[in-house]
Amino acid sequence: MLKKCRKLLFFWYNKTMKTILVPVSCPNCGHEAYVKSEQFIIPEFHQKHREAILDGSFFQYRCPVCRTAIECIHDCVYHDHARHLLLILKRQGNEKEIVVETVEPIQRLVRTPLQLRETIRIFEDHFHDVPMSDLKARLLAQFKSRGCRLLSISYHDFDEPNKLLWFEVMNDHQQIDYRAVSLKYYEAARQRTSSIIDDTVLQEVTITNVMKRVNLIKND
Ligand SMILES: [Zn+2]
Image (tube, rainbow, N blue to C red; front, side, top):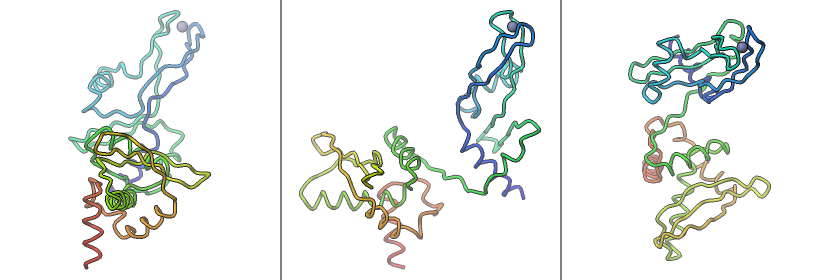
C-alpha cells in the first residue's frame, strides 16, 4: 500500500517541480502582487528553504506597501533523500489532482552537464534514452566505418514536420557538427531495446551499458 502511494506521489512531483509565482493580495491595503516561491524542495540542495520552512518564514510575505505580514501558502513537495522522506503539502480541496496515474519515476545517474542536458531533451521530446543509446551506438559505428572518429555524439532536438532527429557530434579535432537521422531508425532502435527499456539495472544509461545489455539478451 505504501509503495503504491509512493509511486503516485513521485509522479505528482515529477509533473510539478518548479519555481512558481503565487498571487497574493494584501488584506490590509489591497495591494496585489506575485510572490516567487519554490514548489519542490530538496533539503540537500536547498538548505535555505529547509531553514525557512522550519522557522516558519517560507510561506510568509510582507506587503511592500503597508508592511503587513501575509501568509502565502501553496502546495509543495519536500523530499529528503537521506531520510527517505517525501512530504507533500497539499491543502484540502483539490485532492483529486494527486491521484493521476501510477507511473514509476525514471531515475538516472548522469555524470556531466552535457548528459544532463541531453537526457532532459530526450524525455521532453517524448523519446527514451535507452533506444537513443542504441541508435547512437549504430551512428558511431557508421562514422567509424567511414574512417571518421568521433569524440562524442548527443541528441540535440527533433524536427517533427520532417521526422528527423538531430544529433550534435564532435570529431577528434573538437569540431562540432550536426547530423540528422530519420525517425524510423529510432523506431527500429526502440524495437531492439524493447525488452530492456524499463530495466532498473540501467540506472546509468550510457552507450556502453545499453549495448552490453542488448548483447546479453541477444546471447540468452
Ligand atoms: Zn498592504
